[in-house]
Image (cartoon, rainbow, N blue to C red; front, side, top):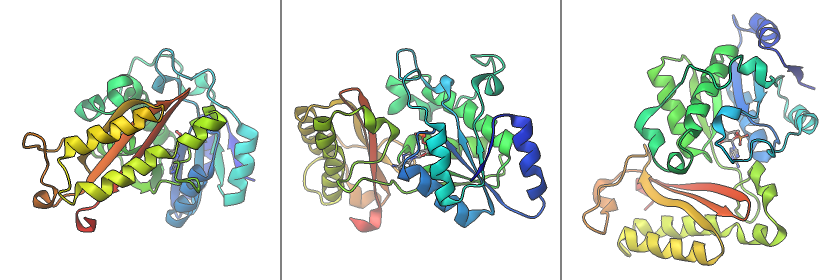
Amino acid sequence: MPMIHHHISALRAAIQPYRAAQRIALVPTMGNLHDGHLELVNIAKQHADIVVVSIFVNPTQFGVGEDFDSYPRTLDEDVAKLATVGADYVFAPNIDEMYPVLPPPTTVRAGAITEQLCGKTRPTHFDGVGIVVSKLFNIVQPNVAIFGQKDYQQLAIIKQLVRDLSYSIEIIGAPIVRAADGLALSSRNQYLSESERQTAPILQQELQYLAKRIGGNHQPLDVLLAASRQRITSAGFVIDYLDIKTAQLDSLKTDGSSVNFNENQQDLVILVAAWLGRARLLDNQLVTANTV
Ligand code: AMP
């Protein structure tokens, strides 16, 4: 079983002896672990000798009226799952330990990259991610940290954070783990009713559909996107966004209505966030220049 620590000082003392000769990996999570999280641990073990998994439902990344209070907290089950994949330490601090003053007067803002996509409807979310990830990096001081590509914008922001704040930490993006029907695994999938759960894979199907077409000069991009949005909405989702960006999350240059993908020869990513009932579902699909 992994050792659980609730206090920063205890975790630091526990992992200090490894620093000289061994590599330490950090896998930050909010708990309620599923196979997607466990895959991050598997990847961490390939890159480090000691794996620390943090489990902290971070209040600063939830907006007013969001699901902070109802977010599922399942520490005992999480620790049992982590034992099956060989995590070494669980860091599960309480809120006071992480935030002696809440909200913290010190902020970590990542700028323009946070003002698009999820940041439009969750304007304070990435500030919360920025400060909690900075704190976890400082507490654990890992050699490597693993984040899921499912939260594509978050991963891009963390890479920027590491660059701009000179963290000496390798950031690894882990592929999206999906259910057999294609739905990206998420702790929030349990908010779905049975019939919503049947509908949910439509999001990923639309991403795949778009990925096949955007390189083929089939139709102008905004026509393709509009048709996809229509189908997603008709299926019962309320779309937050469905967009196509460069892999670095820059906007595409459009000439009126179309994008000449082949001419640009760049990797693209299609990103979607949509509500289905109580669940806000997030997914994305990378489209690499040489696969289209
Ligand atoms: P969360 O507990 O939702 O904050 O997620 C913790 C980490 O797990 C983040 O880096 C997520 O991107 C990653 N993650 C969540 N779901 C998946 C998934 N289905 N596949 C891969 N990584 C995931």
